[in-house]
Amino acid sequence: MKQWVDKLRKERTLNQEELRQLLTHCDTETLCYINGQAREVSLRQFGNKIYVRGLIEISNCCRNNCYYCGIRKGNPKVERYRLSTRQILDCCRKGYATGLRTFVLQGGEDPALTDERIEKTVAAIRKSYPDCAIALSLGERSREAYERFFLAGANRYLLRHETSDEMHYGQLHPAEMSLARRLRCLHDLKEIGFQTGTGIMVGSPGQTTDHLMQDIRFIEKLRPEMIGIGPFLSHHDTPFAECANGTLEQTLLLLSIFRLMHPSALIPSTTALATLAADGREHGILAGANVVMPNLSPPEERRKYALYNDKASVGAESAEGLRILQKQLRAIGYEVSTERGDFVAADY
Ligand code: 5AD
Image 1 (tube, rainbow, N blue to C red):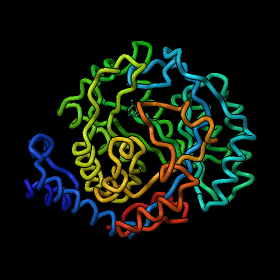
Image 2: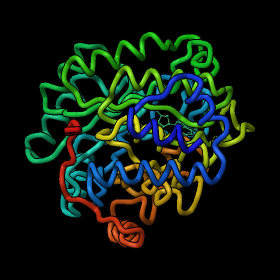
Image 3: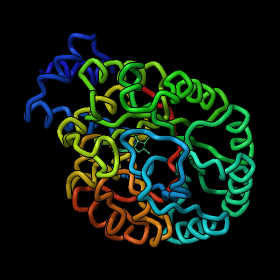
Image 4: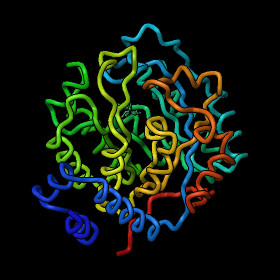
């Protein structure tokens, strides 16, 4: 199996059979080896610096009913909230003071967050923080909306495709949602000039090795600047309440595969990974991730943004805990970077 890892590092791709073997026969030793190789590539590209992004969860109101997600429309138990522009700016102010230079505005597809409202919020952040990157993670919008956000000063957009298989997409989402529309959004975002992120949940219900292979190929073709990979974690008030969580091992394998295929991509060690295992975030970094996204949301709203059970939002997961995070990273030989951390293509 090691030979496929070496080949993947060298050629940044594998053929279907090699990839299948790696996905299906990765034992502990191979996992350790591929994590180490991916870590080396990440160190060569970024040094021991981990970029930090302040995550502001601006609304948990959502018009969609994704079967996996805790804040789906059909969950009547969610206490809904929406931050005002002032509250969002306040989060940015606090984040800036702690050294954060990227703000990520994430939320459900909330019809009350009109294009105009988002545009104004982005413009206000842009005006107050000309040296910061603004990333949005607000789901599917029209091309015109994305253009307005970009012109107002947003630089990045995160929109996971979740799965690139039509049938599997249909198992995760209700009929009114469509993979084609999701992909159209991703292409629009890229064309407009956003640094664009996409990704999947590892171990989502119904996911097969073939699906993972398709996702790897899709991302290989799209060449996104950011790749978000985290384990699926069940939420007790969703149709997938009884489904098993994704595993640490498979998530770390996928992280490393993406790092070896995309040396300069920005890859976060996700909150879901940190929720799955106490040392999940460190494992993610040691498997090739180079970004962490501490939570900057108002502390009293955080528990309401529960995408899955027991979502971590305090300690090193929080912006207040940046010192804890620094300590955790130092313990494994890394440092928090205070740079914006834009995407820069590898020069080799
Ligand atoms: N488990 C893990 N990740 C989830 N997300 C949503 N629900 C879950 C869940 N139950 C992820 C999706 C989405 C991102 C914001 O959070 O991939 O794109």
